Length: 435
Ligand code: SF4
View 1 (cartoon, rainbow, N blue to C red):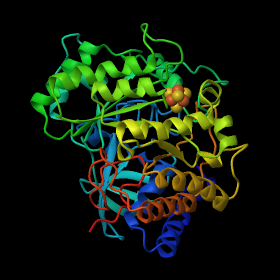
View 2 (cartoon, rainbow, N blue to C red):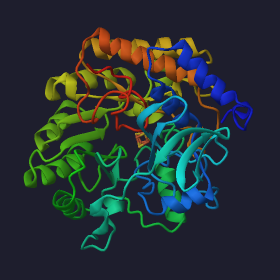
View 3 (cartoon, rainbow, N blue to C red):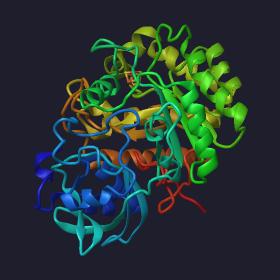
View 4 (cartoon, protein in one colour):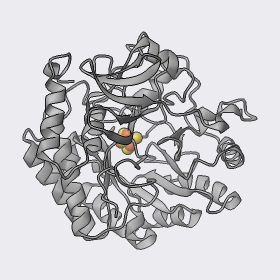
């Protein structure tokens, strides 16, 4: 959080409007969304009471919060909604879905005003707000007794079932874990707060959950299978084998019912083929940050076990198996400006990341990004993320490179375009221009 942007001095609003004016070819929805993702959301006690009737944040992989769980116990605890959807207000926003990152001192605050939910920015009305409905299938319990929301939570306004099947990572400790990541720490926090949180999800639970979703839900359209990296073996299996079993089990029962996606490491070709043969259609071998030296610093485990050049080559090799359109590596937007070794200049950071976008998109591979959330218990710790200007320039270079190469809309992300996009952790889908 940037101190001078908090409060009621109008700095946040002025910056929003400066960006809207400087980048009129980007939708206002994308500008506001990126800033909320960057600064987080606060909730009034009344708004949290209302949230009790809607889908809460399920902590489906990382915390994506700007404060530790223990500190927000008095604030949002676990009752904050997974996302908000905002409309209207002074910028006449079309429906825009934004993931919740709890930040009690954010200038963006959801409140209850005359019985209606409203998003205020620095105390001034910004948009009407809705919370996500609880999926119909959440009413059911698995025969193991586990709650379905823990095994197969839905995000992106119900579009995506998120199956984090391995909630630890074998990259362990500061010399191996990616520095922005709090996956291992999230596991420890959830357990310490008494939540039901198993390290490896049972295949039987997953299959039963997907069966219930198939029977009771018509909103979900895709599922993601993911988890920590497996550098050695897990239950006697290599990473590709371990994750392949889940799609195999689901696709053999419900072929083509959802778009199956795997978010795992950039694996050797034989393991990539296992994933494809198992039924996955989209492969996300995330490269996190483009600059080679920053990759080495930010992803020490990936750099040591695989190496940055091999990682990039494996992404291209995977395109031969899945088809380039179906290989969608993620990077963590903004982490290239992390202190102390990241870029200090916005334009240099953008130039570096743009080089990676050009490289992949010239091969037909479309990277997408999530918005870096400086999670306090990650190795990078509490620090200010990049300014809004960085994210707006990133959105523009992403869209311009995407358009220059005339690439198709990335599959498995729901609808593109402002007013339609469901993807909630960055505005890359919101800036795609639709006919
Ligand atoms: S590979 Fe990196 S980002 Fe992924 S879970 Fe492990 S430490 Fe986190």
